[in-house]
Length: 144
Picture 1: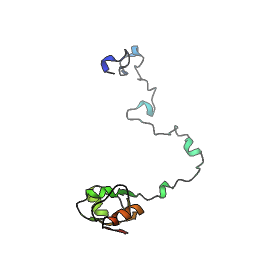
Picture 2 (picture 1 turned 60 degrees about the vertical axis):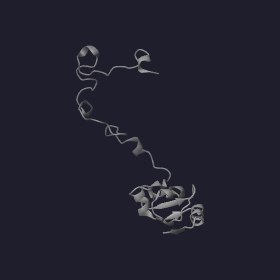
Picture 3 (picture 1 turned 135 degrees about the vertical axis):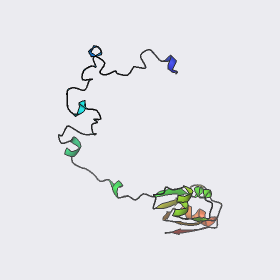
Picture 4 (picture 1 turned 30 degrees about the horizontal axis):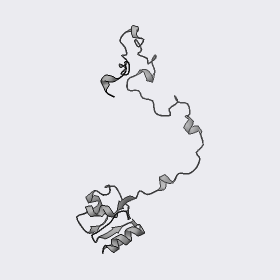
């Protein structure tokens, strides 16, 4: 569908505020009289109920969420190791190659893909399949 083929009235014009009483949006410009909502720059916080105790604070907390206590672990597959220029694989070389973010502290190596080069790998965690593939290629893996 092209813009020239749109049905009439599909592109409604912008509401013009404060341009006289004739269009119904004059004087207070649909903002009412006084108060914060009538001022420029006003935006209502999500869940704000005008000073009344908000509903989300009235309701009891239920259940447990462990997301607060989890540690972030960056995932690297053995197929991605081919992008490295060196055969030494550790946290710093992975950061330098751009395979993990610069703020990552923990890395896990997974066994997706194939590896042809012999790598000396030092990571925090590794899957069993990743360990087998690294050692089958003639490399070694160290869990730090």
